[in-house]
Image 1 (cartoon, rainbow, N blue to C red):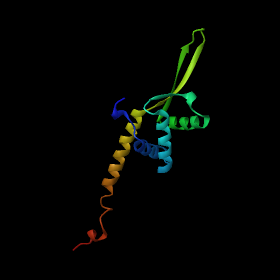
Image 2: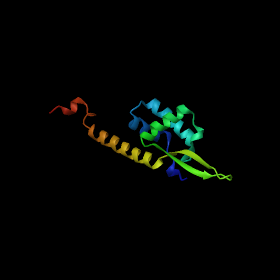
Image 3: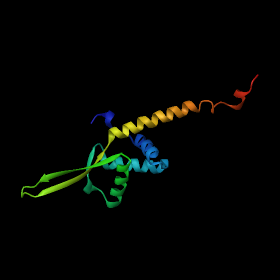
Image 4: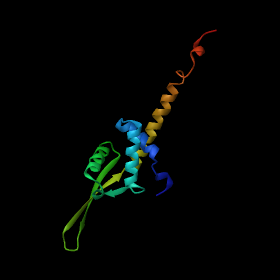
Length: 124
């Protein structure tokens, strides 16, 4: 994994705040939780999660931040074993981040006049 592939807590916080419409503190706690579980990996095994964590992951899946997958492996005795896992969609998070940064920049450009003091509007 390259340094450019790493999603920072602040970046994921911004995306979660925007996509989930939650407060900054809650978004940051959730970002830290997700990044703690995934670390530098893109996939984790579902068995690592508690049921309450899994519910949260299903919600994040609905927002496009996570997705699920599964593999079937044949065991030596001929039985099949299914492995369920979660995928952290880093590329989509980066896309959301880029969109959010554009939106923030556009909003700042629109607000340029609101930052002027009242005396700037007085004609001389």
